[in-house]
Length: 148
Image (cartoon, rainbow, N blue to C red):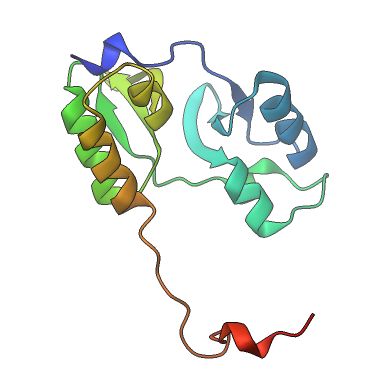
């Protein structure tokens, strides 16, 4: 199966000068956790719900501040297995899909999961993406260090 058979083709986008509150509301309204950030009708970056929460943004901050400009793309004619491999190697849950350097969609792990593709491959990708890196040093405490 090819990526173009599963990818989401209706994309939610924002402009670099949109504020965080606006983008957060877009995510809520369209029930998405990933938005493409555009600048002059070109893809400038992407932002996830996690990006916004981890940085605890003020509602008036420009979304460009949170843009991840290291955008992972894959061609829509590639196989789903190749997409899973890229996701696993880069520890991401979503990829921007292209055709001749034009954005044509977004593929998420949820899209792949809901397609009925071999669950073992998806599980292996999830294990790699969510591999836990244990804290070391200053924030490293044992459970018994906390009192109720």
